[in-house]
Length: 241
Image 1 (tube, rainbow, N blue to C red):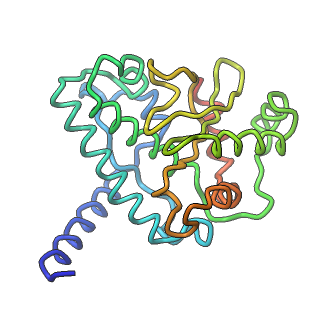
Image 2: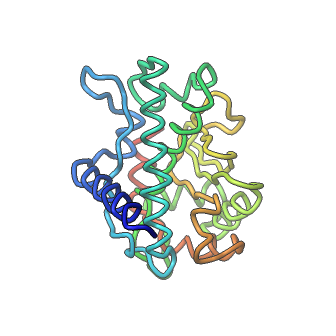
């Protein structure tokens, strides 16, 4: 790498790191919260773990590239599109309810910013025999028969998503449902045939796992269950509808 390019890369990384320290917005706030009198904007979400904090399930290099380059670009481009198209939505849910009226740039990047905001928030350090408890566990048992049946169905949705996309657990009224969306679409978008408020999402774009798992998506999905933060998912289950 040339000295100039290396210097620019370090400078960019420091700029992103500064954004992390200044931002503490939550996923639920992105759906429900208004920004005072200001128009809604996406912000870089603050991670609750280091880039190496999910190893060995998700390696540090993948996390850093995924977070700084992919997610950082989605946030930047989404906010550019919001300005360019004079969007006045109060929150992400309002924006996605009419997203088909706007540009592909806005849909792809707003979806990418929002989807990753959820994804980062429901991860934690690896834990063996990781499982939900309380009301969420009961809701999963009621909807899918058992936690193991839920994991099997969710994993099938993740494996069955052709190419890039996401697998979701959503709350639709009082029901929990599993489905998938392509690219950076999500179940809040008016153009998505699969509807609901996401409380758990799995990124199955190859950039989320390729450095460690190559093309073995099934291995990535299998290990991913160890880093799900079920306490956070439980909070979303209660707070968003």
